[in-house]
Length: 74
Image (cartoon, rainbow, N blue to C red):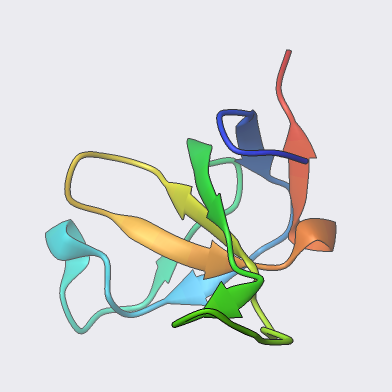
């Protein structure tokens, strides 16, 4: 997986920070977005992020996910 890839969430993942569903449970399953970053360093230092794949789903909504929670969309 690399920056610019189109991805789909393949598992049920509940988030509470979706701008259209603020403070309510929202399931990301089957949502599609684009990988905008892969977190490997912070301020020039290497990090081992728990959720390294940064995905933008809409103009206002982004989320950090694991690689095994996503699948590539062709």
